Length: 474
Image (spheres, rainbow, N blue to C red):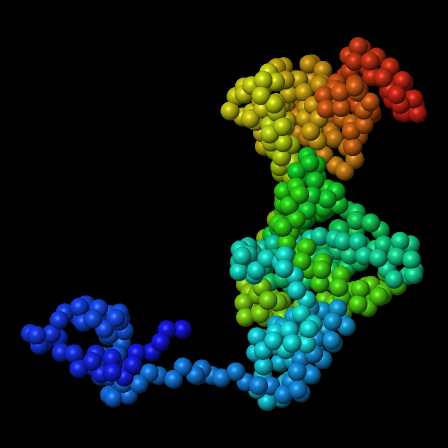
Protein backbone atom coordinates (compact mmCIF):
# COMPACT_ATOMS: atom_id res chain seq x y z
CA UNK A 1 0.00 0.00 0.00
CA UNK A 2 1.43 3.40 -1.03
CA UNK A 3 1.97 6.16 1.55
CA UNK A 4 -0.42 9.08 1.63
CA UNK A 5 0.91 12.52 0.72
CA UNK A 6 1.76 14.71 3.70
CA UNK A 7 -0.32 17.85 4.47
CA UNK A 8 2.68 20.04 3.50
CA UNK A 9 2.90 18.51 0.03
CA UNK A 10 -0.86 18.73 -0.39
CA UNK A 11 -0.73 22.46 0.57
CA UNK A 12 1.95 23.12 -2.11
CA UNK A 13 -0.19 21.33 -4.72
CA UNK A 14 -3.23 23.41 -3.77
CA UNK A 15 -1.22 26.65 -3.79
CA UNK A 16 0.35 26.00 -7.19
CA UNK A 17 -0.71 28.62 -9.75
CA UNK A 18 -0.16 27.53 -13.34
CA UNK A 19 -0.95 31.10 -14.56
CA UNK A 20 2.02 32.61 -12.67
CA UNK A 21 4.85 33.32 -15.18
CA UNK A 22 7.37 32.29 -12.52
CA UNK A 23 5.71 28.89 -11.96
CA UNK A 24 7.31 25.80 -13.50
CA UNK A 25 5.31 23.53 -15.77
CA UNK A 26 3.02 20.94 -14.16
CA UNK A 27 5.41 18.14 -15.10
CA UNK A 28 8.41 19.95 -13.64
CA UNK A 29 6.45 20.81 -10.49
CA UNK A 30 5.45 17.18 -10.00
CA UNK A 31 9.04 16.00 -10.49
CA UNK A 32 10.23 18.48 -7.87
CA UNK A 33 7.78 17.04 -5.34
CA UNK A 34 8.31 13.43 -6.41
CA UNK A 35 4.66 12.83 -7.26
CA UNK A 36 2.76 11.74 -10.37
CA UNK A 37 0.60 13.98 -12.49
CA UNK A 38 -2.58 11.89 -11.66
CA UNK A 39 -1.89 12.49 -7.94
CA UNK A 40 -1.48 16.20 -8.60
CA UNK A 41 -4.82 16.50 -10.37
CA UNK A 42 -6.59 14.26 -7.84
CA UNK A 43 -5.61 16.54 -4.94
CA UNK A 44 -6.62 19.71 -6.80
CA UNK A 45 -9.98 18.23 -7.86
CA UNK A 46 -10.69 17.13 -4.32
CA UNK A 47 -9.84 20.66 -3.03
CA UNK A 48 -12.35 22.20 -5.43
CA UNK A 49 -15.03 19.81 -4.17
CA UNK A 50 -14.23 19.51 -0.47
CA UNK A 51 -12.08 22.55 0.38
CA UNK A 52 -9.47 22.19 3.14
CA UNK A 53 -10.53 18.56 3.74
CA UNK A 54 -8.19 17.76 0.85
CA UNK A 55 -5.23 18.55 3.16
CA UNK A 56 -5.79 15.23 4.92
CA UNK A 57 -5.99 11.75 3.35
CA UNK A 58 -9.29 9.92 3.34
CA UNK A 59 -9.79 7.10 5.80
CA UNK A 60 -8.78 3.71 4.49
CA UNK A 61 -11.22 1.88 6.68
CA UNK A 62 -13.57 -0.33 4.64
CA UNK A 63 -16.92 1.21 3.77
CA UNK A 64 -18.61 -2.04 4.69
CA UNK A 65 -16.73 -3.69 7.53
CA UNK A 66 -16.93 -7.49 7.66
CA UNK A 67 -19.68 -8.59 9.98
CA UNK A 68 -18.87 -10.86 12.86
CA UNK A 69 -21.47 -13.59 12.98
CA UNK A 70 -22.55 -15.34 16.12
CA UNK A 71 -22.07 -18.97 17.00
CA UNK A 72 -25.72 -19.50 16.09
CA UNK A 73 -25.04 -18.59 12.46
CA UNK A 74 -22.03 -20.91 12.39
CA UNK A 75 -24.16 -23.71 13.82
CA UNK A 76 -26.81 -23.13 11.15
CA UNK A 77 -24.18 -23.26 8.37
CA UNK A 78 -22.63 -26.47 9.68
CA UNK A 79 -26.07 -27.98 10.33
CA UNK A 80 -27.22 -27.28 6.78
CA UNK A 81 -24.02 -28.80 5.43
CA UNK A 82 -24.53 -31.94 7.49
CA UNK A 83 -28.17 -32.18 6.34
CA UNK A 84 -27.27 -31.85 2.64
CA UNK A 85 -24.41 -34.34 2.94
CA UNK A 86 -26.68 -36.82 4.67
CA UNK A 87 -29.22 -36.57 1.84
CA UNK A 88 -26.56 -37.02 -0.81
CA UNK A 89 -26.76 -33.47 -2.21
CA UNK A 90 -23.99 -30.99 -2.99
CA UNK A 91 -22.94 -29.22 0.21
CA UNK A 92 -20.66 -26.41 -0.95
CA UNK A 93 -20.97 -22.76 0.17
CA UNK A 94 -23.39 -21.83 -2.63
CA UNK A 95 -25.62 -24.84 -2.01
CA UNK A 96 -25.68 -24.05 1.72
CA UNK A 97 -26.53 -20.40 1.03
CA UNK A 98 -29.44 -21.26 -1.29
CA UNK A 99 -30.84 -23.88 1.10
CA UNK A 100 -30.60 -21.51 4.08
CA UNK A 101 -32.32 -18.69 2.21
CA UNK A 102 -35.04 -20.91 0.67
CA UNK A 103 -35.86 -22.45 4.05
CA UNK A 104 -35.57 -19.10 5.94
CA UNK A 105 -33.07 -20.61 8.37
CA UNK A 106 -30.90 -17.53 8.83
CA UNK A 107 -32.05 -15.04 11.45
CA UNK A 108 -30.81 -11.47 11.14
CA UNK A 109 -28.29 -10.61 8.39
CA UNK A 110 -27.89 -13.37 5.83
CA UNK A 111 -24.23 -14.44 5.57
CA UNK A 112 -22.62 -14.16 2.16
CA UNK A 113 -21.23 -17.12 0.23
CA UNK A 114 -17.68 -16.02 1.11
CA UNK A 115 -18.60 -15.86 4.81
CA UNK A 116 -19.99 -19.38 4.63
CA UNK A 117 -16.73 -20.44 2.96
CA UNK A 118 -14.77 -18.98 5.89
CA UNK A 119 -17.01 -20.76 8.40
CA UNK A 120 -16.43 -24.08 6.64
CA UNK A 121 -12.69 -23.47 6.44
CA UNK A 122 -12.45 -22.57 10.15
CA UNK A 123 -14.41 -25.72 11.01
CA UNK A 124 -12.01 -27.83 8.91
CA UNK A 125 -14.72 -29.36 6.73
CA UNK A 126 -13.58 -27.98 3.36
CA UNK A 127 -13.03 -30.73 0.80
CA UNK A 128 -10.04 -29.46 -1.13
CA UNK A 129 -9.34 -30.64 -4.65
CA UNK A 130 -6.11 -29.07 -5.93
CA UNK A 131 -6.49 -30.78 -9.32
CA UNK A 132 -9.89 -29.26 -9.99
CA UNK A 133 -9.89 -26.62 -12.70
CA UNK A 134 -11.10 -23.13 -11.74
CA UNK A 135 -14.62 -22.31 -12.89
CA UNK A 136 -13.28 -19.34 -14.87
CA UNK A 137 -11.32 -21.68 -17.17
CA UNK A 138 -14.43 -23.35 -18.61
CA UNK A 139 -16.15 -22.23 -21.80
CA UNK A 140 -19.77 -23.33 -21.65
CA UNK A 141 -21.63 -24.56 -24.71
CA UNK A 142 -25.37 -25.00 -24.65
CA UNK A 143 -28.38 -24.65 -26.91
CA UNK A 144 -30.23 -21.35 -26.86
CA UNK A 145 -33.69 -22.75 -26.09
CA UNK A 146 -35.33 -25.68 -24.36
CA UNK A 147 -36.23 -28.74 -26.47
CA UNK A 148 -33.55 -27.98 -29.05
CA UNK A 149 -31.46 -30.87 -27.75
CA UNK A 150 -31.60 -33.48 -25.01
CA UNK A 151 -28.67 -35.47 -23.68
CA UNK A 152 -28.98 -39.20 -22.95
CA UNK A 153 -26.56 -41.42 -21.07
CA UNK A 154 -26.63 -44.32 -18.62
CA UNK A 155 -24.53 -45.67 -15.77
CA UNK A 156 -24.40 -48.81 -13.65
CA UNK A 157 -25.42 -48.65 -10.00
CA UNK A 158 -24.79 -51.38 -7.43
CA UNK A 159 -27.68 -52.16 -5.10
CA UNK A 160 -27.03 -52.49 -1.37
CA UNK A 161 -28.44 -56.01 -1.33
CA UNK A 162 -25.28 -57.68 -0.06
CA UNK A 163 -22.53 -56.95 2.46
CA UNK A 164 -19.97 -58.07 -0.12
CA UNK A 165 -19.66 -55.25 -2.63
CA UNK A 166 -18.53 -57.66 -5.33
CA UNK A 167 -21.74 -59.67 -4.98
CA UNK A 168 -24.12 -56.72 -5.24
CA UNK A 169 -26.69 -56.65 -8.03
CA UNK A 170 -26.15 -54.09 -10.77
CA UNK A 171 -28.94 -52.02 -12.27
CA UNK A 172 -28.79 -49.48 -15.08
CA UNK A 173 -29.88 -45.87 -14.56
CA UNK A 174 -30.71 -43.79 -17.66
CA UNK A 175 -30.53 -40.00 -17.40
CA UNK A 176 -32.18 -37.66 -19.89
CA UNK A 177 -31.40 -33.95 -19.49
CA UNK A 178 -32.39 -30.89 -21.52
CA UNK A 179 -29.19 -29.27 -22.79
CA UNK A 180 -30.26 -25.63 -22.39
CA UNK A 181 -32.06 -25.67 -19.03
CA UNK A 182 -30.51 -28.77 -17.36
CA UNK A 183 -34.07 -29.93 -16.68
CA UNK A 184 -34.24 -33.68 -15.99
CA UNK A 185 -36.91 -34.90 -18.40
CA UNK A 186 -36.71 -38.62 -17.77
CA UNK A 187 -34.27 -40.36 -15.41
CA UNK A 188 -35.29 -43.97 -14.74
CA UNK A 189 -33.79 -47.35 -13.80
CA UNK A 190 -33.91 -50.83 -15.36
CA UNK A 191 -32.76 -54.28 -14.27
CA UNK A 192 -30.81 -55.26 -17.40
CA UNK A 193 -27.47 -53.89 -18.61
CA UNK A 194 -27.54 -51.01 -21.07
CA UNK A 195 -29.57 -52.05 -24.14
CA UNK A 196 -31.62 -50.58 -26.96
CA UNK A 197 -35.05 -51.66 -25.73
CA UNK A 198 -34.68 -49.97 -22.34
CA UNK A 199 -33.19 -46.87 -23.98
CA UNK A 200 -36.22 -46.60 -26.26
CA UNK A 201 -38.55 -47.06 -23.28
CA UNK A 202 -36.80 -44.29 -21.31
CA UNK A 203 -36.87 -41.83 -24.20
CA UNK A 204 -40.44 -42.70 -25.17
CA UNK A 205 -41.69 -41.99 -21.65
CA UNK A 206 -39.97 -38.59 -21.65
CA UNK A 207 -41.26 -37.71 -25.12
CA UNK A 208 -44.83 -38.56 -24.20
CA UNK A 209 -44.62 -36.25 -21.17
CA UNK A 210 -42.68 -33.29 -22.58
CA UNK A 211 -42.77 -33.56 -26.39
CA UNK A 212 -40.20 -34.35 -29.07
CA UNK A 213 -36.85 -32.50 -29.05
CA UNK A 214 -35.11 -31.54 -32.26
CA UNK A 215 -32.01 -33.64 -31.47
CA UNK A 216 -30.88 -36.26 -28.97
CA UNK A 217 -27.18 -36.32 -28.08
CA UNK A 218 -25.64 -39.54 -26.76
CA UNK A 219 -22.37 -41.40 -26.77
CA UNK A 220 -21.49 -44.07 -29.34
CA UNK A 221 -22.80 -47.00 -27.31
CA UNK A 222 -24.53 -49.87 -29.09
CA UNK A 223 -27.76 -49.12 -27.27
CA UNK A 224 -27.84 -45.48 -28.36
CA UNK A 225 -26.20 -44.57 -31.67
CA UNK A 226 -24.00 -46.50 -34.12
CA UNK A 227 -23.80 -43.87 -36.86
CA UNK A 228 -20.04 -43.42 -36.45
CA UNK A 229 -19.66 -47.20 -36.68
CA UNK A 230 -21.68 -47.54 -39.87
CA UNK A 231 -24.94 -48.73 -38.32
CA UNK A 232 -28.39 -47.61 -37.23
CA UNK A 233 -29.85 -48.60 -33.86
CA UNK A 234 -33.43 -49.18 -32.77
CA UNK A 235 -33.30 -45.93 -30.79
CA UNK A 236 -32.16 -43.94 -33.83
CA UNK A 237 -35.05 -45.29 -35.89
CA UNK A 238 -37.58 -44.67 -33.12
CA UNK A 239 -36.38 -41.09 -32.78
CA UNK A 240 -36.44 -40.53 -36.55
CA UNK A 241 -40.04 -41.72 -36.73
CA UNK A 242 -40.95 -38.92 -34.31
CA UNK A 243 -38.90 -36.28 -36.12
CA UNK A 244 -35.90 -36.26 -33.74
CA UNK A 245 -32.34 -36.68 -35.03
CA UNK A 246 -29.96 -38.77 -32.95
CA UNK A 247 -26.43 -37.34 -32.85
CA UNK A 248 -23.21 -38.35 -31.07
CA UNK A 249 -19.93 -36.93 -29.94
CA UNK A 250 -16.56 -38.17 -31.17
CA UNK A 251 -15.10 -41.41 -29.87
CA UNK A 252 -13.32 -41.14 -26.52
CA UNK A 253 -14.76 -37.66 -25.97
CA UNK A 254 -17.09 -37.79 -22.94
CA UNK A 255 -16.87 -34.01 -22.46
CA UNK A 256 -19.30 -33.60 -25.36
CA UNK A 257 -21.93 -35.12 -23.08
CA UNK A 258 -20.46 -33.25 -20.11
CA UNK A 259 -23.77 -32.03 -18.69
CA UNK A 260 -25.11 -35.57 -18.46
CA UNK A 261 -21.81 -37.00 -17.24
CA UNK A 262 -21.81 -34.44 -14.40
CA UNK A 263 -25.42 -35.27 -13.50
CA UNK A 264 -24.35 -38.91 -13.01
CA UNK A 265 -22.21 -37.75 -10.10
CA UNK A 266 -25.10 -35.93 -8.45
CA UNK A 267 -27.54 -38.82 -8.84
CA UNK A 268 -24.99 -41.48 -7.81
CA UNK A 269 -24.18 -39.56 -4.62
CA UNK A 270 -27.89 -39.23 -3.85
CA UNK A 271 -28.56 -42.95 -4.35
CA UNK A 272 -25.52 -44.02 -2.32
CA UNK A 273 -26.67 -41.84 0.57
CA UNK A 274 -29.98 -43.76 0.72
CA UNK A 275 -28.50 -47.28 0.22
CA UNK A 276 -31.34 -48.81 -1.86
CA UNK A 277 -31.47 -52.60 -1.86
CA UNK A 278 -34.00 -53.22 -4.64
CA UNK A 279 -34.75 -51.93 -8.12
CA UNK A 280 -38.16 -50.73 -6.92
CA UNK A 281 -36.50 -48.64 -4.23
CA UNK A 282 -34.12 -47.15 -6.79
CA UNK A 283 -37.15 -46.18 -8.87
CA UNK A 284 -38.73 -44.42 -5.89
CA UNK A 285 -35.51 -42.56 -5.13
CA UNK A 286 -35.11 -41.47 -8.74
CA UNK A 287 -38.57 -39.89 -8.60
CA UNK A 288 -37.61 -38.10 -5.37
CA UNK A 289 -34.32 -37.03 -6.93
CA UNK A 290 -35.99 -35.54 -10.00
CA UNK A 291 -38.42 -33.55 -7.86
CA UNK A 292 -35.66 -32.03 -5.75
CA UNK A 293 -33.17 -31.61 -8.61
CA UNK A 294 -35.63 -29.87 -10.92
CA UNK A 295 -37.55 -27.72 -8.45
CA UNK A 296 -35.36 -27.08 -5.41
CA UNK A 297 -31.68 -27.52 -6.29
CA UNK A 298 -30.23 -24.26 -7.57
CA UNK A 299 -27.97 -24.90 -10.57
CA UNK A 300 -24.77 -22.87 -10.57
CA UNK A 301 -24.45 -23.04 -14.38
CA UNK A 302 -27.81 -21.36 -14.98
CA UNK A 303 -28.37 -17.57 -15.01
CA UNK A 304 -28.94 -16.29 -11.50
CA UNK A 305 -28.35 -19.83 -10.22
CA UNK A 306 -32.02 -20.60 -10.76
CA UNK A 307 -33.42 -24.12 -10.55
CA UNK A 308 -33.77 -26.19 -13.74
CA UNK A 309 -37.56 -25.96 -13.47
CA UNK A 310 -37.38 -22.15 -13.34
CA UNK A 311 -35.11 -22.14 -16.39
CA UNK A 312 -37.43 -24.61 -18.18
CA UNK A 313 -40.48 -22.39 -17.53
CA UNK A 314 -38.68 -19.17 -18.47
CA UNK A 315 -37.00 -20.46 -21.62
CA UNK A 316 -38.41 -20.44 -25.12
CA UNK A 317 -39.31 -23.97 -26.24
CA UNK A 318 -38.30 -25.09 -29.73
CA UNK A 319 -39.39 -28.72 -30.13
CA UNK A 320 -39.20 -30.81 -33.28
CA UNK A 321 -41.76 -30.19 -36.01
CA UNK A 322 -42.67 -33.87 -35.74
CA UNK A 323 -41.96 -34.58 -39.42
CA UNK A 324 -40.42 -38.08 -39.63
CA UNK A 325 -36.82 -38.38 -40.77
CA UNK A 326 -36.37 -41.03 -43.52
CA UNK A 327 -34.38 -44.03 -42.38
CA UNK A 328 -32.43 -43.76 -45.62
CA UNK A 329 -30.99 -40.48 -44.32
CA UNK A 330 -29.74 -42.27 -41.21
CA UNK A 331 -28.12 -44.96 -43.33
CA UNK A 332 -26.52 -42.38 -45.61
CA UNK A 333 -25.03 -40.58 -42.61
CA UNK A 334 -23.67 -43.83 -41.23
CA UNK A 335 -22.07 -44.61 -44.59
CA UNK A 336 -20.51 -41.16 -44.67
CA UNK A 337 -18.88 -41.79 -41.30
CA UNK A 338 -17.65 -45.19 -42.47
CA UNK A 339 -16.27 -43.77 -45.69
CA UNK A 340 -14.48 -41.01 -43.83
CA UNK A 341 -13.01 -43.49 -41.35
CA UNK A 342 -11.67 -45.61 -44.21
CA UNK A 343 -10.22 -42.51 -45.86
CA UNK A 344 -8.54 -41.42 -42.63
CA UNK A 345 -7.10 -44.89 -42.10
CA UNK A 346 -5.80 -45.24 -45.68
CA UNK A 347 -2.02 -45.43 -45.88
CA UNK A 348 -0.10 -43.50 -48.54
CA UNK A 349 0.90 -45.63 -51.50
CA UNK A 350 -1.82 -48.26 -51.15
CA UNK A 351 -2.69 -47.84 -54.82
CA UNK A 352 -6.08 -46.26 -54.20
CA UNK A 353 -6.58 -42.91 -55.89
CA UNK A 354 -9.38 -40.44 -56.26
CA UNK A 355 -11.48 -41.40 -59.27
CA UNK A 356 -14.12 -38.67 -59.41
CA UNK A 357 -15.36 -35.79 -57.26
CA UNK A 358 -18.11 -37.94 -55.73
CA UNK A 359 -15.65 -40.40 -54.23
CA UNK A 360 -14.29 -40.06 -50.75
CA UNK A 361 -10.70 -39.08 -50.12
CA UNK A 362 -9.59 -42.73 -50.35
CA UNK A 363 -11.42 -43.37 -53.63
CA UNK A 364 -12.86 -46.56 -52.15
CA UNK A 365 -16.51 -45.82 -51.63
CA UNK A 366 -19.10 -43.57 -53.15
CA UNK A 367 -22.28 -42.80 -51.27
CA UNK A 368 -24.84 -40.69 -53.15
CA UNK A 369 -28.07 -39.71 -51.33
CA UNK A 370 -27.97 -42.89 -49.27
CA UNK A 371 -27.01 -45.14 -52.21
CA UNK A 372 -23.96 -47.40 -52.52
CA UNK A 373 -22.31 -47.61 -55.93
CA UNK A 374 -20.17 -50.64 -56.76
CA UNK A 375 -17.90 -50.00 -59.75
CA UNK A 376 -15.88 -52.35 -61.91
CA UNK A 377 -12.72 -50.57 -60.76
CA UNK A 378 -13.69 -51.10 -57.11
CA UNK A 379 -16.00 -54.12 -56.78
CA UNK A 380 -16.02 -53.84 -53.00
CA UNK A 381 -18.23 -52.71 -50.13
CA UNK A 382 -17.03 -51.16 -46.88
CA UNK A 383 -18.57 -51.68 -43.48
CA UNK A 384 -17.30 -51.27 -39.92
CA UNK A 385 -13.75 -50.72 -41.15
CA UNK A 386 -13.73 -53.90 -43.27
CA UNK A 387 -13.26 -54.20 -47.05
CA UNK A 388 -15.41 -56.94 -48.60
CA UNK A 389 -14.84 -57.95 -52.24
CA UNK A 390 -18.00 -58.78 -54.21
CA UNK A 391 -18.48 -60.50 -57.60
CA UNK A 392 -17.92 -58.12 -60.51
CA UNK A 393 -21.26 -59.01 -62.12
CA UNK A 394 -22.92 -57.17 -59.21
CA UNK A 395 -21.60 -53.81 -60.38
CA UNK A 396 -24.42 -51.28 -59.98
CA UNK A 397 -26.24 -48.88 -57.65
CA UNK A 398 -27.87 -50.12 -54.47
CA UNK A 399 -29.94 -48.83 -51.57
CA UNK A 400 -28.45 -50.04 -48.28
CA UNK A 401 -30.55 -51.07 -45.30
CA UNK A 402 -28.70 -51.62 -42.02
CA UNK A 403 -30.40 -53.00 -38.93
CA UNK A 404 -29.04 -54.22 -35.62
CA UNK A 405 -28.49 -57.70 -37.03
CA UNK A 406 -28.35 -57.49 -40.83
CA UNK A 407 -26.82 -55.59 -43.76
CA UNK A 408 -28.69 -55.71 -47.09
CA UNK A 409 -28.22 -53.98 -50.47
CA UNK A 410 -31.27 -53.63 -52.73
CA UNK A 411 -30.96 -52.96 -56.46
CA UNK A 412 -32.38 -49.49 -57.19
CA UNK A 413 -33.63 -50.65 -60.62
CA UNK A 414 -36.04 -53.35 -59.49
CA UNK A 415 -35.84 -53.31 -55.67
CA UNK A 416 -34.56 -56.90 -55.48
CA UNK A 417 -32.16 -57.97 -52.75
CA UNK A 418 -28.70 -58.35 -54.27
CA UNK A 419 -26.30 -58.70 -51.33
CA UNK A 420 -26.92 -59.54 -47.70
CA UNK A 421 -25.25 -60.95 -44.61
CA UNK A 422 -25.83 -61.04 -40.84
CA UNK A 423 -24.33 -58.51 -38.41
CA UNK A 424 -21.96 -58.43 -36.73
CA UNK A 425 -19.74 -59.72 -39.54
CA UNK A 426 -18.37 -63.19 -38.81
CA UNK A 427 -15.47 -64.62 -40.80
CA UNK A 428 -12.40 -66.76 -40.33
CA UNK A 429 -10.55 -65.18 -43.20
CA UNK A 430 -6.75 -64.93 -42.76
CA UNK A 431 -6.97 -61.17 -43.38
CA UNK A 432 -9.63 -59.82 -40.97
CA UNK A 433 -9.78 -56.38 -42.63
CA UNK A 434 -9.97 -57.44 -46.31
CA UNK A 435 -11.69 -60.59 -47.59
CA UNK A 436 -14.12 -61.82 -50.29
CA UNK A 437 -17.84 -61.97 -49.61
CA UNK A 438 -17.94 -65.77 -49.85
CA UNK A 439 -15.84 -65.88 -46.65
CA UNK A 440 -18.60 -64.13 -44.65
CA UNK A 441 -20.79 -66.37 -42.53
CA UNK A 442 -24.34 -66.42 -43.86
CA UNK A 443 -23.55 -64.28 -46.93
CA UNK A 444 -25.98 -64.39 -49.87
CA UNK A 445 -25.97 -62.81 -53.32
CA UNK A 446 -28.48 -62.48 -56.10
CA UNK A 447 -28.19 -65.16 -58.82
CA UNK A 448 -24.82 -66.47 -57.59
CA UNK A 449 -22.44 -67.88 -60.18
CA UNK A 450 -21.48 -71.55 -59.83
CA UNK A 451 -17.88 -70.80 -58.76
CA UNK A 452 -18.93 -68.31 -56.07
CA UNK A 453 -21.61 -70.64 -54.72
CA UNK A 454 -19.19 -73.57 -54.59
CA UNK A 455 -16.50 -71.54 -52.78
CA UNK A 456 -19.02 -70.29 -50.22
CA UNK A 457 -20.42 -73.80 -49.73
CA UNK A 458 -16.97 -75.27 -49.16
CA UNK A 459 -16.04 -72.44 -46.79
CA UNK A 460 -19.20 -72.81 -44.72
CA UNK A 461 -18.79 -76.60 -44.60
CA UNK A 462 -15.25 -76.26 -43.28
CA UNK A 463 -15.71 -73.44 -40.76
CA UNK A 464 -19.43 -73.35 -39.89
CA UNK A 465 -20.82 -76.89 -40.38
CA UNK A 466 -23.63 -76.20 -37.92
CA UNK A 467 -25.10 -73.70 -40.39
CA UNK A 468 -25.15 -76.00 -43.39
CA UNK A 469 -28.80 -76.87 -42.98
CA UNK A 470 -29.60 -73.21 -43.52
CA UNK A 471 -27.23 -72.53 -46.44
CA UNK A 472 -28.72 -72.66 -49.88
CA UNK A 473 -26.47 -72.51 -52.93
CA UNK A 474 -28.81 -71.13 -55.49
